[in-house]
Image 1 (cartoon, rainbow, N blue to C red):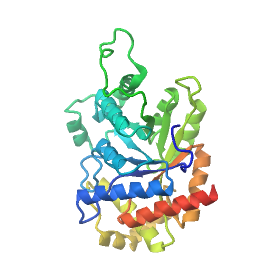
Image 2 (tube, rainbow, N blue to C red; image 1 turned 90 degrees about the vertical axis):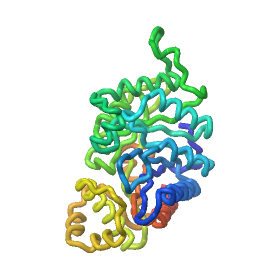
Image 3 (cartoon, rainbow, N blue to C red; image 1 turned 180 degrees about the vertical axis):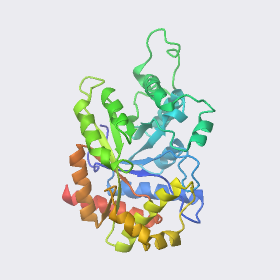
Image 4 (cartoon, helix red, strand yellow; image 1 turned 60 degrees about the horizontal axis):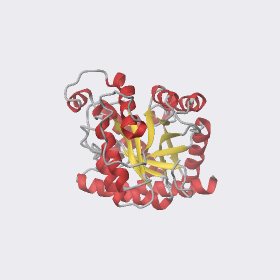
Length: 340
């Protein structure tokens, strides 16, 4: 792994949320501030997601955000987690990420997803009306991308004459995303690094990543498995802040299921945090969220990392208050450093 020896095995996945009443420009500037803060705190990576048709998020073009954040940081690895490959031509992805590598050598990550990252209608538009099953196409798309990034095509292949420019010797650090066993299984069979979304499927995460490490097949001599797990986490000594974080995520998921994709109003979150519905949701907590004072959050994340045999934890902290998010990331890094 081409990472600095002095970084923590921690990353941040940022949805680049637009807070109620702010502009997309302000949200992107805020994301840069988060990236700079976690770089200073010693995090290894800062990733942005790819989501579409969401008025509450500013992450529909993660490759552009990666370039923007890369220009305003100096050491931390930056990238997309992920590029939803069904929405993109592999040749164009190779060109884009080689360009990023030319701009920021040694710092670019590329995590690949097979879901569209959006609703069916938006996926239909992104794919220009192509009706084929995107999941079925994913293995072939990954194979094409790897070929364009340097593996090459067999002799006589029609794409063998193509060059994904600019030509750079380095490759982005590649990961395969998953929220079901498919992703880590695909990564293991193909000798790639894996990231599992505990924040989406907490009941599957541990076994999926343990199976990945057990079944890993090297693509090249000496290759070893490498995995990460993304976890919803918020660290604070303020009980009200913890409650509002938990309420905001719960309300966000409820709104998405209702087709509501607007930024949350702070007063709605505060009211929901005091409601019987939220108390009921807390009683039925499935372990998806890791919240509390910094030491206890760090302890639980270290436990999850060990249980999953993962190399890194990717912290996911969607929240109404960007200052609270930044403080949580910093406090968690400090607590992790003291415990590890």
